Amino acid sequence: EAGVVQSPRYKIIEKKQPVAFWCNPISGHNTLYWYRQNLGQGPELLIRYENEEAVDDSQLPKDRFSAERLKGVDSTLKIQPAELGDSAVYLCASSLDWGLEETQYFGPGTRLLVL
Amino acid sequence: SQQGEEDPQALSIQEGENATMNCSYKTSINNLQWYRQNSGRGLVHLILIRSNEREKHSGRLRVTLDTSKKSSSLLITASRAADTASYFCATNTGFQKLVFGTGTRLLVSP
Image 1 (tube, each protein chain N blue to C red):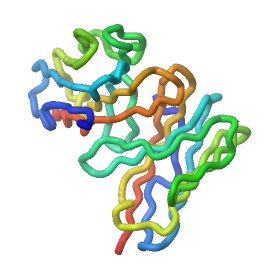
Image 2 (spheres, each protein chain N blue to C red; image 1 turned 45 degrees about the vertical axis):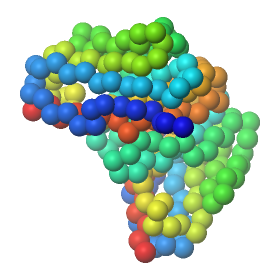
Image 3 (spheres, rainbow over the protein chains, first blue to last red; image 1 turned 180 degrees about the horizontal axis):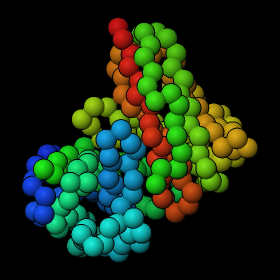
C-alpha cells in the first residue's frame, strides 16, 4: 500500500515569491492534516480536513497561507508571499477517520528554504 | 504552540543499552502517542497509551503514563543502531488534534 505522497521534496525560493506544496493521502483516508515543523521542534498543526471540509484551521496564518482539498482526496498548501520565517519542513498526514485513537500516517515532508 | 517538553533533548548510548526518554505536558489528555522520525523521513507512529492506562508494551518499547504528574516515559530496550532517530511525544486533547513535544534525539552507536 502506498503511503502519503508529497511533492516537491525540496524547494528553495526567494522571499516574496509564492510556493505550493502537494499531498496525496493514503487511499480511503478521510482526514488530512498539514503540519509545519521548524528546525529542532516538533510538528505543529496548520489545518485539518475532514473530507473536503477544513474543520480546524486555527493555526493557519490566513494572511499568506491557503489550503484546499478538492474532492476530498489530494490537497494543496500555498504560501503567498513567502517570508524568511516560513523556512521549515511542511508535513502532510492522513488518517482513516477522525476518532481519538486513529493513527496518523505522515508523508516525508517538503523542506522549504526561503532566501 | 508545543504542548510540552521532552527530556533529555539528546541522548547517546551504545548498542544493547536501554534508552529512556521523558515527556511532560500541560493539559488534560485523552491519550498520548509516541512517534519516531528518522533523518529525512516522515514521522512513524510507535505506540498509543490512553489516559486511563499506566503502562503499555510493544516489542522492545515500554511506555508509562502518570496523569497526576502529566508525564510519560518511553523505554527502548536492547537498543540497535537502527533506533537512531528523533522521538516525539504527542498528546491528543480531543478530536484528533495532536500536539507534539520538542523531541529527543537518540544516537545509538555500534
